[in-house]
Image (tube, rainbow, N blue to C red; front, side, top):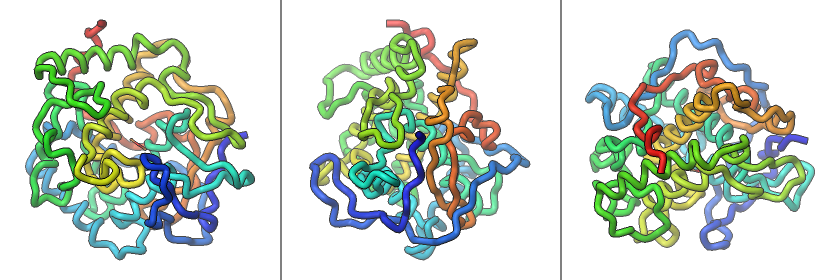
Length: 343
Ligand code: C2O
């Protein structure tokens, strides 16, 4: 059977997975008793997700304004900035038990729910921001770390006065080339070598190391299964490397980006994940005539709960995430140089 959405009324303490300690921080969402089955609205206009290193001044101002307004919402409004960050904590740090299996947590990482869960998360996050500034075309920017031109933290995130700024980042990495193979130690490679390695890593996780769908998407995870059956290439590789590389070693536990419970407090997290989401799209396109999606009801019918842009609690299904166009957004087209970087 598919993973069921959590029972929010039973949300409990969360665990810092980096230390194994219980968090003395409550990341449970506000309660409500009305849940609606979400119907994807027919998009009237497409939202445009730009590359973060290519955006205009106008866009930067708009995005910061939206985040500012989100931070200014009442603390108990589920659309508030901190509440949005808490979504990640609740779904990823063991605050929810699986319905019907009190001994089993819900965990959306390290399994086949990784891409669809985060797609929904970004979807509502983006719609909330768009609503706050009255712009139905607003799309989140992607951190284009798979392209040499985007391999540093996008400069818009380094403006210390901007709403999207976060001081809890690795201060040695603010303007350096990201290492998509990062595991906690700087490699000592030259920037040129790092770029070449990154392109090889991208080629491997998007093409060379992927035969069956599980290789990329992650392993099956069904109701009653233990957490962490296994991540796909992209989640395990570039995705995790970016988190660890961005987290602040001055903090006790890699906060913010480097820890599940805190990652969503850094706006950079959403741009990182928009690029992860873009990788899913590109990967599906690269499949050509090979199957792109699991044809398994336990995947298609797995569901989650989110608050939408109207603060309405909605139940969403994996099967509604298969087309980003149907979800109403497109990505800016940029070069994909790793396509030719066969190691
Ligand atoms: Cu839900 Cu990048 O983690």
